[in-house]
Length: 74
Image 1 (cartoon, one colour):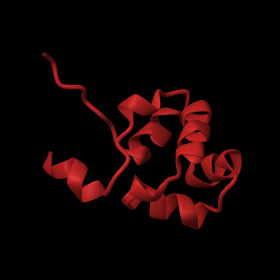
Image 2 (image 1 turned 180 degrees about the horizontal axis):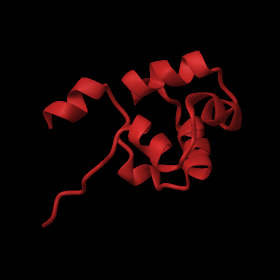
Image 3 (image 1 turned 60 degrees about the vertical axis):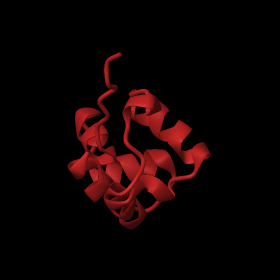
């Protein structure tokens, strides 16, 4: 069985070629909120996760939603 590798919320945004400001506007949040989410995406609601999937054109199954430190230690 292979392990599914996930990328951070910030990496997904960068991969989509979006700045914090551009992504936040498309998601419908403030840039400050997006920066906060990129440090701890465990607070992102399921509805916003779906919006992020559409905006970033990246499956949410492959985006890590949790504290950035947890991703780095896994």
